[in-house]
Image (cartoon, rainbow, N blue to C red; front, side, top):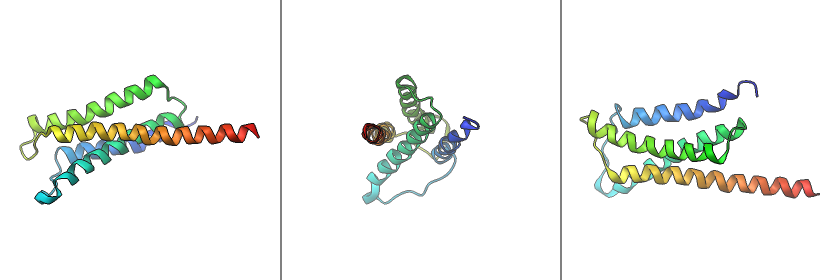
Length: 131
């Protein structure tokens, strides 16, 4: 497991990217018709964040139910924390409960995507080992 920490590089990069987009980078405002697109963007970002951490723990052999639960709590908590930090510390940004919910939903979708993929890989390995 030499250099297994490198599996966490994408997760750290996504975390930093979300921080930058949520705090000091000014994102252009959207048209009123595209308001829900913002929620999809939030959910997608947190799905990628969750997937990157879960895959890193999986590839390093450290993924357990307890670790997965912690990743879920930390990823969802990070989403809520980013929304709260916008409210308290950044004038040009604003807090939105819908965004916080979209962040947590994205985290859950990330787990579902990984779970479905992991189950399919496990089933295929079991089928191949039976032959």
